[in-house]
Image 1 (spheres, one colour):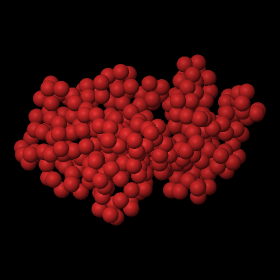
Image 2: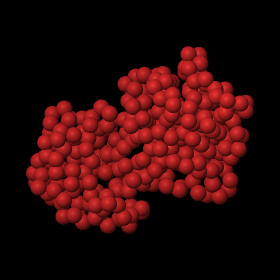
Image 3: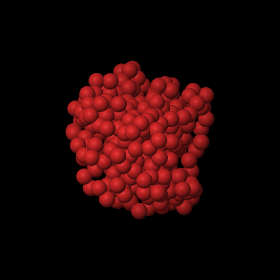
Image 4: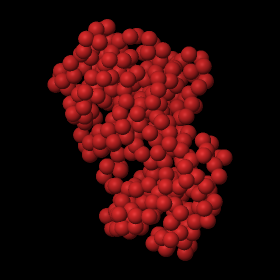
Length: 321
């Protein structure tokens, strides 16, 4: 993602602009389309729209749910795989895509908004929460470990061959927004910061810690469907007092970040079902993680999305009003 996980940008694993014209329609089939009956409020004929698709499965979950609801209400929807941030905003300006379902950028789109290429249409209901996590078994066995003030009390549990006699602190990958060195230094923590090279490396750390009941503390975030498979508990530092990671003192936690929807003026001004759906779409981190977990387990995204839609008919109906 230039997801810089996340206070600013997520580092995308996609290869940038070459994917700009690569489209993949996300259809759910006849049964799925018939299961979401158009309402009286969707009388305006729905147009054709493209949704930007970014490289993490949680994003896929949100985009696919919107896709299935929109298609069931007469919209022609395509999905366009793109690197996030500037590449996507340029595509919106050129008319190639109409919607970003989940942007972690904290306003990085402003210059495109100033030119009228896109509009911010509010939160999508998901809250990005970065922090330091331990496997749930540790929180169950040592309930006070989730208070950062007690970390030194347990530091010896985290020692390993790499940590130089201190606790091992598994930090986020390069390119992610991380303040681990500051947290350790400012709070006089008896830990050695060990940057991990990838999201996969952190997943491996936490998976083994859960399976083997070994101690681990590491950088993680939500929404992320991995938490549905390997429960973890967040270690809480004092309430956040910064927005710019470079200016963070290290004395306080990462900020919570509402995740944002962006759309083209064309989509928002149409008055059709798509405009209503994307304006009103909102769901929780748990909702996203549920669908994302199904997708990651091998369920077709359209099927996983429709499963959630069928189980949450009242919520979906509210998006169409």
